[in-house]
Length: 173
Image (cartoon, rainbow, N blue to C red):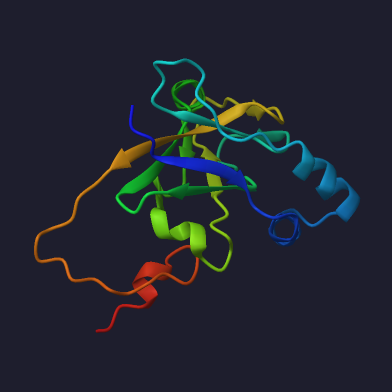
């Protein structure tokens, strides 16, 4: 097996700011949530996906959406990417969807202004009227490391400085 990266928690300050922006709340409760964050891990030695665990109880009726600050960041080699998907069981039973279909975490996201804090925006897209409950501490998303290559004429020198969508903000028309 190739070593692709290492999961870490974002700093308390980063998590607290992002949690307040998303959900509000008192710092004592946010600190309790932060201290209980579990790093992603594989369920079995044959698993490709690293399960991300929900930091809070989430109940989503059909059509409802929630943005979850996971408290997690990942340090990877520059020729690796982390691809995030809903856990297959939740997708199969409830049509739980990531709003961006597949979350792409680039290796340089780790050093961005937001410490590379990984968020997940999920929607219960059930067509059968099913409400989904994701208990705090249970897996809801999985990340798979993939090695990638570039073209021989690739001459990109631009560096990231930001979060979502920041790689296109530096493009010149």
